[in-house]
Image (cartoon, rainbow, N blue to C red):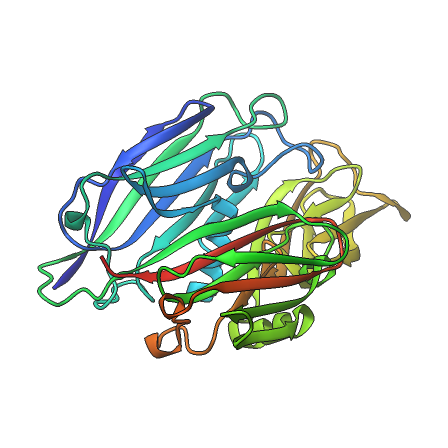
Length: 368
């Protein structure tokens, strides 16, 4: 058995906004799909105006006709990838004129790349397709018009002769801006076993525990209570179980001095300002936001917005996309998956603390 990388699209030129459909026109089992998007800055974007690529990709989904086999935003896929792989997917973020910004995410069908037990078999489906919905902001200080490029790769298992025991299906189950107090009770489908749930509250400079203070997961009218914990405790357990994430960005400083990371619960921020005669230092950190000042000629002021004031920022933190991960044990052991198909109901109960948006993502084991 051999693992092989197959291009389904290679450096496809993108319009500035669209939904792109990619046919899954191969017959061998697939361990992973990789989605890679590049675009070029138009001019030199400032920290107050530019958006990264992933925040402008609203949906990446795998469909078979009307059936949804996977679906969420690129930011959510990247956060899930961190928990799955122990590291953030590849990024090359140079928000500078003449450079190329590149971001990637993965749809993993197994517990790891090359998992011979869990694979997606396209031959079991009539018309499997990947659909990517995006809208790149173009113009001065954003992305150059028509500069987007898309590459989609499938990592296949050639000459596979074993038994496929299903594939991992990840999708967003719930989206809502919550109330500032009370409870939000979410009914989850009882169709397939759950490997994990990921709860995201990506409000800038606000921790996930500040949006909902506790989490309860129960089945059959609380006959079975699987999780009943404070969000802060879940977050601390995640830190121990999955470790820190790292991110490096290079960009022009802005008058506000704000630099936002994909990781909340930032523990360390480093800054190298590349203009001579400048000394940058981290003034404050609030969740995913670092405030960086520039000491120039013995004066302390907000970081200059001058186009030649280029800074390379290194972030280290936890909670990708303001998220916490819920599971019942070993993510690699099917015996620890939540057997939702044996329940009459499965409910997620969030105790609310602030009126922010929340996304609930599930990953389930599907056997067709």
